[in-house]
Image 1: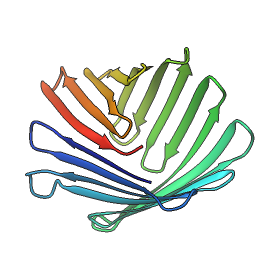
Image 2 (image 1 turned 30 degrees about the vertical axis):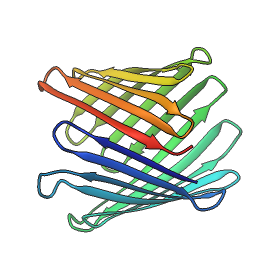
Image 3 (image 1 turned 90 degrees about the horizontal axis):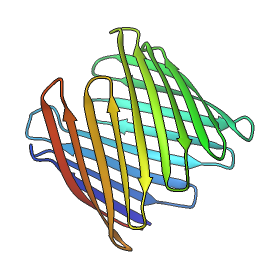
Image 4 (image 1 turned 120 degrees about the vertical axis):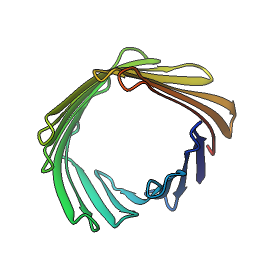
Length: 207
């Protein structure tokens, strides 16, 4: 199966994603962002494989980016994993470790990386249609701390997601199903501190 997603922002940025199901367990995906500013366009190719009790991914991007990750189920609810990356042009590398615990109504994750990044997240399913989430991120190198709360509301023909963080940014994403094969996507982000507003729209084609 093939899925195509495209989104264009008022400032001219074009975001696109192509996902192809090679087999029942193997997926290929291409992400791209095109801008008018030299050096800011990005591209990334992912190859994902899902086994019976594990998942692994390989990544190749522009500017000499190479990465990979592996997640293994340890018990019915607990999974542990590791990841790494290499930036050839900047000659930088990093490794990280993560843990995930999930039940029928909640998901909790934790991650720590050699780059000094620590992140925690928690998602609680309130009902069949509503989920609430919160996350926390700390960067030891820059001493930056960010926390956010968000929501996910699923309606009959649409899905609304949004969040607000401690940096004063508010964002929302609306997905409206036009027909069984196409979905309209509207997004908005307002950063009160930076006085930066972003709006975008797109159409996702595929099942």
